[in-house]
Image (cartoon, rainbow, N blue to C red):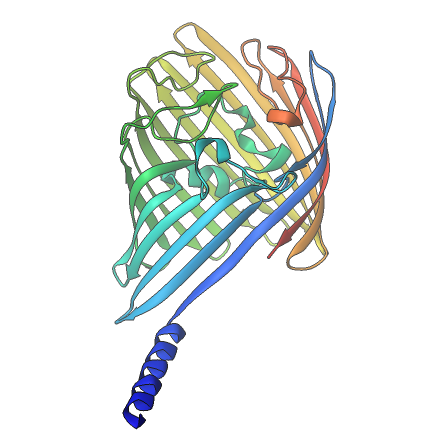
Length: 360
């Protein structure tokens, strides 16, 4: 009996030590807003929308200390339609559609496996004052999106270890016979073909700059954008972005070039954040020109947001934006049920929203 009690005590102590070296955290964001959108050629639409300044999501993350500086970690993160209580990508069967990764990290850096942001997307979102969210999202002017513009499935990544201000990553993502899913000119971020890319940057004090390059292969019958181009073999993306914090104003921006067959697109984004007491003011301008193979079109957007922080977790905000299309595009500040219909070709799209965001 005494031996049994001793064994249980030893096992309990061992379990306690093991649990002390690992942790799992539940976290997430809820962001909801009252939104107004008016597109040329259709009626205005009022809606309860979401993701005005941050993406609504539910996540789990964990880390285990394996000793010797080696750690194992995971992230499972799913988008949430907080206005209706559903998952944001339920139709595709992706529950953790925003990120699902397993990592080993140490002095050598980090090896990360699973679904994650592509290296070429990081410069678009990091150096956008709106974080590619809400009515001010800089990607509203995008004309030639790839199927893995934001995320890639089936990926293997390597991240450099901390080396002063230098940082970087490389990614290879297998197609695994994935099929593209396109609707209304937008992609659902699945792998129609192999993706390879990399990013390297330097950050020190108020300064941050990074460049990235990626190539997306397409399989037969997988167009990059059904509105303007047909089946093509591959898409090449190059971008460079940067930011400088002056204290009273943080300036940021990026340049992005995409090449798909004979078509190419040049996008420019410049934006900034002005701190104002407990709040901050975000402003931005985005411009795109796509041309080649008889196609020539321009799209631009102007946007502004005011965010008032009630606490470190909760904020109120208001955003206004306008997209102006060229004769061959119908881009909008919104999508889905947040608009009655896309604007007419060459028309404008205008939006305004008031919302609240909470981290947990």
